[in-house]
Image (cartoon, rainbow, N blue to C red; front, side, top):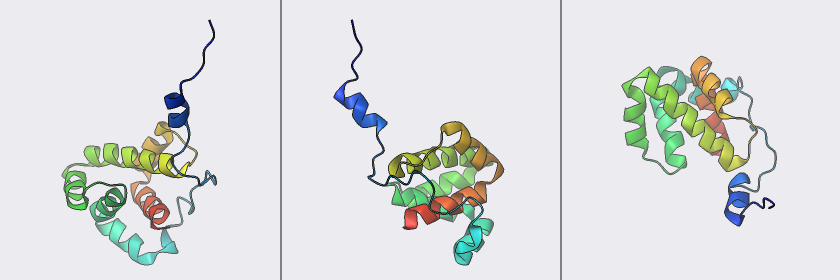
Length: 119
């Protein structure tokens, strides 16, 4: 008996986008590439998160409010959305990296994600 992946399994393992760069367009510490975004995210990260979520098909206001509720929820939601962005653009990484990035550098992560979604 041999194993053959189904068509659905093959489709799920491929990135949703044809972009094969497999790297973020901006580095994690390229915060000052967009100073306005940097200032907004530093003082009100929920706004950047809401706008990022909206570009992924979510509700900006709803995501912004939920993100503001607690730092634990913000960390979990940030990790989840970062994973969605990675899959959408075929970027290398894993959930553990996403989790650590949002835990230790959440503002930089939000800015990097916003810059990725902008282009």
